[in-house]
Image (cartoon, rainbow, N blue to C red; front, side, top):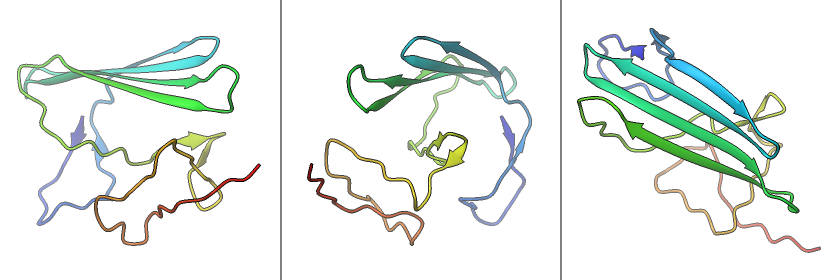
Length: 125
Protein backbone atom coordinates (compact mmCIF):
# COMPACT_ATOMS: atom_id res chain seq x y z
CA UNK A 1 0.00 0.00 0.00
CA UNK A 2 1.35 3.41 -0.95
CA UNK A 3 0.41 6.93 0.01
CA UNK A 4 -0.27 8.99 -3.09
CA UNK A 5 -0.39 12.72 -2.44
CA UNK A 6 -2.67 15.00 -4.42
CA UNK A 7 -0.94 16.01 -7.64
CA UNK A 8 -1.96 17.64 -10.91
CA UNK A 9 -0.94 14.73 -13.11
CA UNK A 10 0.25 11.14 -12.75
CA UNK A 11 4.04 10.90 -12.55
CA UNK A 12 5.07 7.58 -14.07
CA UNK A 13 8.51 7.34 -12.47
CA UNK A 14 7.84 8.99 -9.12
CA UNK A 15 8.58 6.99 -5.96
CA UNK A 16 5.64 7.02 -3.55
CA UNK A 17 5.79 6.43 0.21
CA UNK A 18 5.16 2.77 1.13
CA UNK A 19 2.66 2.68 3.99
CA UNK A 20 2.28 -1.12 4.20
CA UNK A 21 4.43 -3.51 2.13
CA UNK A 22 2.14 -6.43 2.96
CA UNK A 23 3.37 -9.79 4.16
CA UNK A 24 6.11 -11.38 2.05
CA UNK A 25 7.14 -15.03 2.02
CA UNK A 26 9.89 -16.70 -0.01
CA UNK A 27 10.05 -20.42 -0.78
CA UNK A 28 13.21 -21.86 -2.30
CA UNK A 29 13.06 -25.02 -4.41
CA UNK A 30 15.77 -26.89 -6.32
CA UNK A 31 15.01 -25.17 -9.64
CA UNK A 32 12.92 -22.16 -8.58
CA UNK A 33 12.17 -19.44 -6.07
CA UNK A 34 8.60 -18.43 -5.23
CA UNK A 35 7.85 -14.95 -3.87
CA UNK A 36 4.39 -14.25 -2.41
CA UNK A 37 2.98 -10.93 -1.24
CA UNK A 38 -0.32 -10.70 0.64
CA UNK A 39 -1.86 -7.24 0.98
CA UNK A 40 -5.12 -6.44 2.77
CA UNK A 41 -6.72 -3.11 3.55
CA UNK A 42 -10.12 -3.57 5.19
CA UNK A 43 -10.74 0.19 5.11
CA UNK A 44 -10.41 0.55 1.31
CA UNK A 45 -11.76 -2.92 0.50
CA UNK A 46 -8.74 -3.80 -1.64
CA UNK A 47 -6.75 -6.98 -0.98
CA UNK A 48 -4.77 -9.47 -3.05
CA UNK A 49 -2.34 -12.35 -3.09
CA UNK A 50 0.45 -11.98 -5.66
CA UNK A 51 2.87 -14.79 -6.45
CA UNK A 52 5.90 -14.63 -8.71
CA UNK A 53 7.94 -17.75 -9.51
CA UNK A 54 11.39 -17.59 -11.08
CA UNK A 55 12.10 -21.02 -12.56
CA UNK A 56 15.15 -22.42 -14.35
CA UNK A 57 14.43 -24.70 -17.30
CA UNK A 58 16.17 -28.05 -16.90
CA UNK A 59 18.85 -28.65 -19.53
CA UNK A 60 18.54 -25.16 -21.05
CA UNK A 61 20.11 -21.78 -20.33
CA UNK A 62 16.61 -20.39 -19.78
CA UNK A 63 14.57 -18.79 -17.04
CA UNK A 64 10.75 -18.65 -16.84
CA UNK A 65 8.86 -15.97 -14.90
CA UNK A 66 5.36 -16.92 -13.72
CA UNK A 67 2.89 -14.43 -12.20
CA UNK A 68 -0.38 -15.05 -10.37
CA UNK A 69 -2.65 -12.36 -8.92
CA UNK A 70 -5.74 -13.32 -6.89
CA UNK A 71 -8.16 -10.65 -5.72
CA UNK A 72 -9.05 -11.43 -2.10
CA UNK A 73 -10.74 -8.09 -1.38
CA UNK A 74 -14.28 -6.81 -1.64
CA UNK A 75 -13.53 -4.38 -4.48
CA UNK A 76 -12.56 -5.23 -8.04
CA UNK A 77 -8.96 -4.52 -9.02
CA UNK A 78 -8.93 -2.72 -12.34
CA UNK A 79 -5.51 -2.07 -13.84
CA UNK A 80 -3.33 -2.43 -16.89
CA UNK A 81 -0.38 -4.71 -16.24
CA UNK A 82 2.78 -2.66 -15.97
CA UNK A 83 5.86 -4.36 -14.61
CA UNK A 84 8.32 -1.61 -13.97
CA UNK A 85 11.77 -2.28 -12.55
CA UNK A 86 11.68 -5.32 -14.87
CA UNK A 87 14.02 -7.54 -12.88
CA UNK A 88 17.46 -7.77 -11.31
CA UNK A 89 20.17 -10.31 -12.09
CA UNK A 90 22.99 -10.70 -9.56
CA UNK A 91 21.71 -7.56 -7.78
CA UNK A 92 22.22 -5.51 -10.97
CA UNK A 93 19.29 -3.73 -12.64
CA UNK A 94 18.62 -4.32 -16.29
CA UNK A 95 20.38 -1.82 -18.53
CA UNK A 96 22.39 -1.44 -21.74
CA UNK A 97 24.63 -4.42 -20.90
CA UNK A 98 21.70 -6.83 -20.44
CA UNK A 99 20.08 -8.63 -23.38
CA UNK A 100 16.78 -10.43 -22.87
CA UNK A 101 15.83 -13.02 -25.52
CA UNK A 102 12.24 -14.11 -26.12
CA UNK A 103 11.04 -17.05 -28.24
CA UNK A 104 8.88 -14.55 -30.19
CA UNK A 105 9.25 -11.10 -31.71
CA UNK A 106 8.71 -8.29 -29.21
CA UNK A 107 6.89 -5.07 -30.20
CA UNK A 108 6.31 -1.94 -28.12
CA UNK A 109 2.64 -1.00 -27.81
CA UNK A 110 3.48 2.67 -27.26
CA UNK A 111 6.34 5.11 -27.73
CA UNK A 112 9.12 4.11 -25.31
CA UNK A 113 10.57 7.65 -25.40
CA UNK A 114 14.13 6.30 -25.37
CA UNK A 115 13.66 4.52 -22.03
CA UNK A 116 13.92 1.06 -23.59
CA UNK A 117 14.62 -0.50 -26.96
CA UNK A 118 13.23 -3.48 -28.83
CA UNK A 119 14.98 -4.93 -31.86
CA UNK A 120 15.34 -8.22 -33.64
CA UNK A 121 18.74 -9.88 -33.24
CA UNK A 122 19.69 -12.95 -35.21
CA UNK A 123 21.93 -15.36 -33.34
CA UNK A 124 24.20 -17.69 -35.28
CA UNK A 125 25.94 -20.56 -33.58
